[in-house]
Image (tube, rainbow, N blue to C red):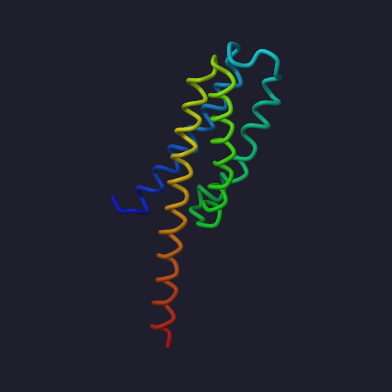
Amino acid sequence: MNKIETARTATFIGYFGLLALIAFWAINPTTLKESSTSFVLLLGGLPLLLGLYGILKQKPYTHAWICIISLLYMIHGVVEVWSAPDNRIFASLEILLSACLYLGAGFYARYRSRELKKLIEENETTAD
């Protein structure tokens, strides 16, 4: 497995793991006592769902900005670990998955854009 495939695998694990965690966290009655499930799913899942198409289509630009979005989930996880002892397991998973997403998407964007740049340069030299 090369570097791009490894980064892509880490991105998928982090991305779909976060989506599953948010869905489970929202429907679990012991973790959210005062919030509406649909509101939490919308607020928690929407930023990730905005990048779904680009991640599935292997677009480096989408991977680059999903890194920034993953930092929001990491911040949320750290705050939850600190402030809500009942949610520490979910929050720790959120930190772990968002770190996996951040690193995987960041390295994928870097390696894939370099690969595409090299392909463009090779095509330009063969066209001349």
